[in-house]
Length: 150
Image (tube, rainbow, N blue to C red; front, side, top):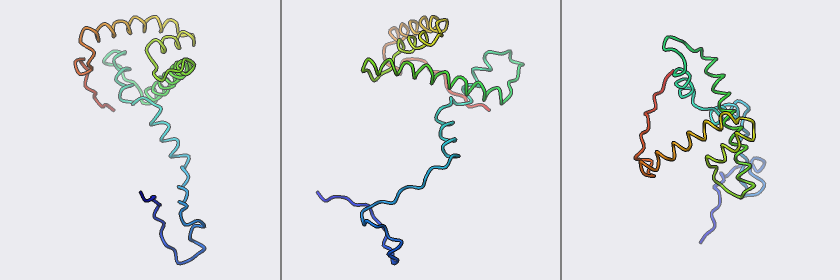
C-alpha cells in the first residue's frame, strides 16, 4: 500500500518553501483567551443546571443574582474535580480504569467530607435498588427533561 504524504503547496520563492518537502508546518499557537474559554466551558457545569438546583432550594419569590450563580457554578465544579481526582488516584493505584460510586465515597471520606459521604452512601444504595427493580437498562429509568434557563 502506498504511503500517504501531506499536500504541501508549491512556492515559487524557495525562501518561503519548507526546508523538508514532507514536513508539515506547525499549527498556530493557541491564544490565552482561547485557553481560558476552553477551560471554563470544559470545567464548569452548565449554568442553567446550577441555576435550576439553586432555585429549587429557595422560596419561589426569591431571586438569585447572576454573580451568585456563577460563584456557585465555579465552586461546585471545583468540588467535583477535587473529589474525582482523589478517586482517580485510588483507581490508578489499584490499576483500575473505572471510577465507581465506592471510589467517590472513599475520596469524600479521605478528604474530610464524612458527613456528605454518609448521605451519599444511602443515596447510592437506593439508586442501585431502583436500578435492580427497574432492570439494568437505562432506557427503563425515568429521566427528567432538561430545561434551559437564563
